[in-house]
Length: 218
Image (cartoon, helix red, strand yellow):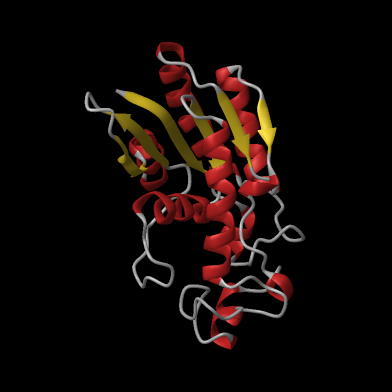
């Protein structure tokens, strides 16, 4: 039996992604037209699912691209959206607004390359972010035990969930691809022996975006 279910939707493509900029709070200007189209398609897919098996809550992080993604989903599902700072991405400090290429060159790699070292003045460390965000995500999961929860989230939030629920050691060199507009689903199972186990049902599912990719090629 599935008890708690967590569904993460990575935000649609944002302008800072296209421009190659570190998209912190000062820099994020929201979704591109393609990002809106991606989000509308994922919202249609989730709305169909919601009619058969309703979600209990919808959360979005505070950055503009997340709130715009969450608002589209909220309207499609007729489900109120809550904005929660616990779902924000890493603190980028002085890197906010700078080209990622410059930041990575100066730091000898991205946030994952040296996980216990800030990648810019005033930034998080990657392991520090995973630890803090994982602790806060655990609190949010506990608050909604037994419910179906939907998240409009950063790709980093999906990685936090995987790190937490798979028990991945901090500093692991492995990672996960998380595409714009993708769906990732975790399910908490309770078997007949009363044993509980988190199961990753799907990761980076972009089936609903196939037609959009074909239109771009055409």
